Structure formats: structure tokens, C-alpha cells
Amino acid sequence: MKHPHTLACAALLSASAVACAQESTFTPAATQPSVGRFITKHLITFDRYNDDNNAGGTDLALTTTVSYGITRDLSASLVLPFVVRRPDAGNDSAIHDLGDLRLEAKYRFWQHDPGPVDTIRLAARAGVELPTGTDGLSSEGVDPYAGIVFMSILGRHGFNQSLTYTMTTDAGAIRFGPGQSLSDVLAFDSAYLFRIAPGAYDNETAGSLYAMLELNGAYETNGDTEIMLSPGLLWEARNYALEASVRIPIHSDLDHRPEREVGFSVGIRFLF
Image (cartoon, rainbow, N blue to C red; front, side, top):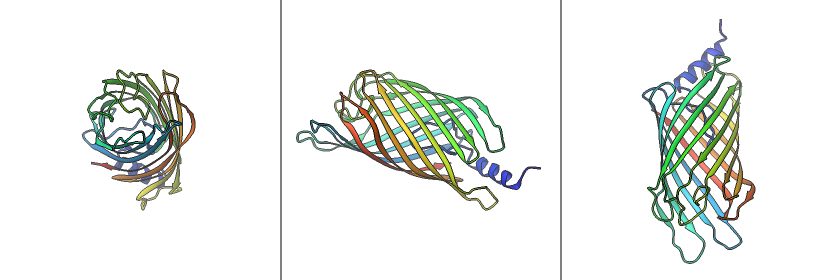
């Protein structure tokens, strides 16, 4: 007979469709919404950029992601940011409008469940970024991307690793982040999550608190490289999740855009 704690945990994960279980803020995960259900994620991020020529500025963005479960292993997502960008150089005023829209499909092609609540998964993802943003907020090109995601949940420990390659077809007028120049981008992301509480699930479990630590890097074909360390906290309940993190640069070798000095994020997710 299975331990009642295990049964309760399995019921909890089933209720949330394991859709956002131990999924960190910036690292893609091999999770999917249940068939016919939606997950929405609303993330507010603030990033400060600067360089020796005072050509930096700030980005404040509200990014909404809507994901829909098509089959057990296939989902489709729409990602749309609203951005307030304030360049430092000259007398440029703030730009505030929609950014570039992303459309993505994700297919989980392998899954192994070594225990009732443990899982190891691999997924492929592919999509396109469309130049829907206004001048100064858009990459101004149709940029396809593809990648692979590894995920494991083993007891109280969660791991996510992702590689994504983006083909950049045009350059934005204001170039803050990776992919806003004419160079292609290889993004490499890793995340570790530890379940702080509960230590074990029971029938009274309403949610889980996780500590997150992410390593998010980008290499551009023009030689620019950036790696961010992102510690944070995640609270996951049955039908919603709350998250907060800070982004700290630990390596910046940038010649074609300003360096990111610091970043912050808070977010909420809903399961429908």
C-alpha cells in the first residue's frame, strides 16, 4: 500500500496538472497544461542597463504568457510584453507600448516517472518572434527559434536545463537585450529548486514553498556574452503560483550593447 503522504502529494500534483510544478521564472521547463486547459503567467520585470558611454537605460515590462494544452504532450503558447523603455542618451523620452509577440509550440517527447511524484522529462520547443512592437521596442524582424528542455523532479529537488537558438533577421533601433542586434543568440538556462515546505505532503497541504536559483546566459554570434544569477522564491498552490527573484550579472563581455546592472521580477500564474 502506498504511503498516505505520497497519495496526498500525487493528488495535489494531479489537481494542478503538474503544469507549473517546480517551474522557475526564466528557465523553460518540460511542463504542459492539461488537455483543454489554460495557464496564464503575468510577470513584471525591471532591468537597468548602462555602459561607459551612458548609452543605457531601463526596461519595465509586464509580460503575459497564455499556454493551452492541445494534447497530453503538446501545448501552444502566446507571449506578449508591454514595455516602458527609458533610454539615458540624449533627450529621448520614455517609450511605452507593446513589444514583440512570440508564438510557441512545445512537445514533450519523453517522460519517465521513477516514483509517484518524481518525474524526468524531455521536451522540444519551437516558435517565432514577430515584429509587433513599436519603434525602439521591436527587434524589427521575424525571428524563429528552437530549443530543447530537460526537467527532473526528485523528492524535494527540481532541476531544469534548457538550450535555445534564435535566428535574428533584423536589428532593433535601441539594443538593450540579447537578440536585438543582427546576431543570432544561443541562450543557455539552468535552474535548481528546493522545496522548503512542506517537508512531506499530507491531506492538509495547500501549497508548496520553493527556493529558486537560476543561471541564465546568452551568447551572441557577434561575441557578446552575458550570464545572470537569479535567486528567488516560488509559492505554488493548486490553481495559482506566486514568484519573485532578483537578477545579478556574474559575467558580462559586451561590445555591442550596454551591460545589465541589475534586474528584479515578480509574477503570478493561474490555472484555468
